[in-house]
Amino acid sequence: MDGALKLKEVSYVHAEGYPTGETKHGPNALIDESLPVVIIATCDPNDQGAVLRYEKNIANIRSFKEQSGRVIAIATEGNHEVASLADQTIFVPSASDLLSPILEIVPLQLFAYYMAVEKGLDVDRPRNLVKSVTIE
Image (cartoon, rainbow, N blue to C red; front, side):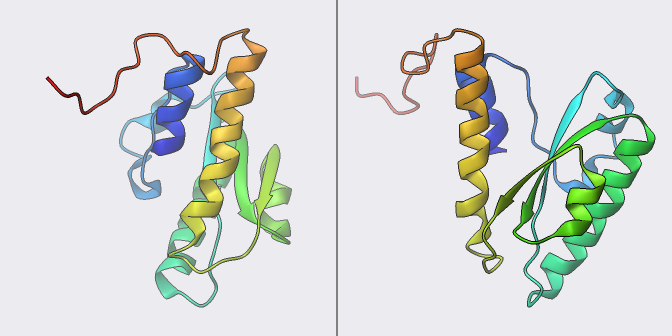
């Protein structure tokens, strides 16, 4: 969700973050060849919850591809399964499920940054962005 927020803030591209289990309830209807889908498909093999989430992500990637979706995946280094399914894969180092978000956010922030740069936008001065906490 933070990756989607960064994309909106600096590149002015509409983006939404969804838990993998909720993509069938609306966003799925939007998927076609013109909608890029960014999916985080990392996995900590030592965490049962992470393995279950990973398996759901793999099923989602397959479903998105059946709908002609373009998939950009963030995966754990050495994961050939995700790389073989996605159109583009960005690898991050293997880490525990609790530490993975720290590694996953970096490519998402860079994606937002380079998208804004490509559009000719000033990433240091995004429009209409204000602090969420102000002193009055």
